[in-house]
Length: 396
Image (cartoon, rainbow, N blue to C red; front, side, top):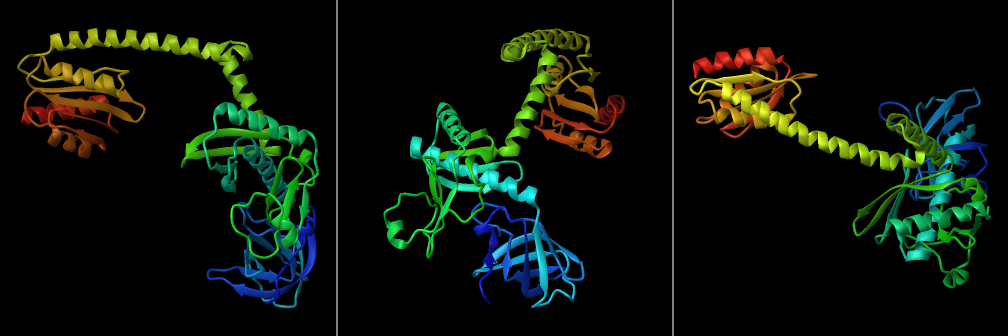
């Protein structure tokens, strides 16, 4: 089959075109795939997702294109339905989802600018790249400090503000031999070069905006160490605007909650954190006094089962263990939760694990532990759990 003519490479802003079906193959379960003589659809590759859109037949039937792949020079369009009219020789009208395409053009061009900047400033190679649904994932070959990333982000945006042309060329082998450019793999045959003057020169088959100003904004929203380098999450263009707007919305909520000026939110958060830490220490001490009082009221020879609202898992454990110091029977600390009851059972001598298993089975619970102490949660109310434990304890 003849290779597919790639209209998107000559003009990435072309959104529709007439073409002819070269082949149509049904798929199990419905739908199928169609090869065209020429297409405006970009196939998945080079870290860029495939275009979306539709193929319209002469009878008006519109076939939704869910995916596009290239194999041996032929571009195949995966469609949701494959009617009998979709046969070789049939003319079709192909149209892409332009909003989807332009978003990918902004992300891909922004990635070029940032990758070239990181390479120029720090010698970092781009060893992984994918345009995800929320952000662009970029993997670098070496670690970069937060200060370095901030510097690179700022410089990359300066290239955006200069509105430089994004140039595509097809150098000859002789010209290529004297060029310095980025490429993640060896390329056989004709090389398609994308050049952003001063920012990047890279072998690439993707679609890009015509000038850097159309990228709008480049923003690194996350960075972490990964396989000896960095994994970056980057957003560009409309995605970057949406991210900044979301950040502003979150900031407004924080400002309202803390009653602080926007520039003072960090200090306000530190103050609230310090106050919370002090309250936790105070609560810990008060709980200790309460646990001592409950232990003092326990029967030294009997069971000690208490329901105490507001305890966290650590508090439950502390109370149950404290009770074993005063009571020789079954000790249990219970607290109400939004899903039922949190529990911790303990005994100075003996194994409470069988009782924990019985509690889980009877009260739709989960949990376990060591012979002397078991802890978990269940769907029953604390009062029902207490009654179950009292009944079981009487049989021990």
